[in-house]
Image 1 (cartoon, rainbow, N blue to C red):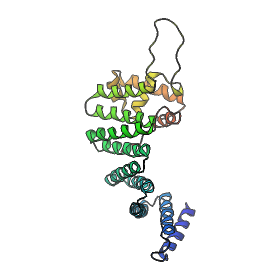
Image 2 (spheres, helix red, strand yellow; image 1 turned 120 degrees about the vertical axis):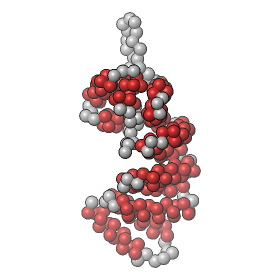
Image 3 (cartoon, rainbow, N blue to C red; image 1 turned 135 degrees about the vertical axis):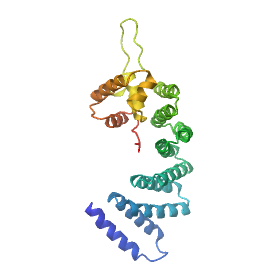
Image 4 (tube, rainbow, N blue to C red; image 1 turned 180 degrees about the vertical axis):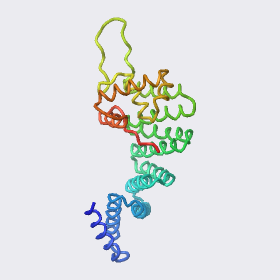
Length: 267
């Protein structure tokens, strides 16, 4: 931390004495380094100011890829300061820039974050509309992980709009696309098929997908027509198999295994 603060002081001094209109590329690089130092030191107010300067310059130069990356960093800085409207604007700008740069998979990441912001704000219909764009970007880029995450969130939004059955249908469809539907027990004894990553049963994976979508045990129970206690039993079994202590840790573990993407968090 001290090293970053020392570096920041040196960079500020360099910018203070930088000759106007000279070596603009080098100056832009120094501004970027100073912004990174501010982020590492949790000085998000300064980071926001510097990142806005970077974004303006990248936009002036028409560098869409660099602009997209800076807008994403700006969104994160706003999120860490609790400035949700500004964060939403930056996320949307990042998605637009990534699309213009031909990186639709990255655009899907930021649009998914936008949908999560909208859910937290209670704008469920707007969130569903945004997820339509997420799906298009994810399909175009072959990002199955983002498709799965989007469908989990879509199921959650539908449930919040009072459409629980439609929500669980969306989740089951996503699982079906991955070939991870719940196993059907044969009437006679036979060889069992392979289980999903982590050794989870189809039902456990189905529930963990709903967990990743931000659903409570009660909401999951209502969608699957089982009791919240049964949901908790399946969650505990999943945690045990994955060697995790919390739901969030389990979702991250499944993401590492390539089965579920991590949740983006809610406010």
